[in-house]
Length: 278
Image (cartoon, rainbow, N blue to C red; front, top):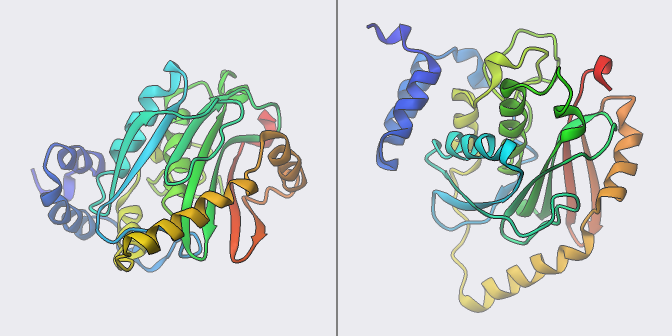
């Protein structure tokens, strides 16, 4: 079979069966086969990235989701770990799904019926300078219990996209009615083609994480992460978050930023439900 006929998903599946040492080779194959038009567009989320002195970034995803979501969280972890600069591990969660409190140095993933508030999923990161210090993902069962959204392709797309935001990725496109890009970082009224990352997502991660942060001594590192832990005072509880999101709902603004002072802030990305389903 000719290389041009190999599907993106087949390549991704093949990659997952090999050791990380082969990932760069397969990524080069993908980038040479797939549409080159994506290569010129950046969808980095403000240049934000996790601090690390070596690649790949090892990041724990806390599982606070129900059994109905476990498979989709596992798939998202596996899909994003195809990247040679990202290595995620799903571990036991450390919060309650309704509150979904952030924990320094990791990501908490939650699902609950968060209300008829217009959003399918939200990803929130806490930032010091350009460094992401912690994050949360919430998927809203108020909508995923409805027949329109209670489908594997919608759950897979939204979970994949919200986890992607946690690494510092923004959307590739925010028009639901444009031709699907074959990326979970694409807004779409048709989720079927957009259930997994595509080549440009992996290329963007390579760009974001191509540099390494300085190696810190024990004292400096303790001071750095001590500051990160102090950011817990800036946590957004569910009610605070809902009130802020209400202000953005009518305009369908997909992100918001809250400054905490001293160069620290919280940024949230929102995946909106279609108007007909709010």
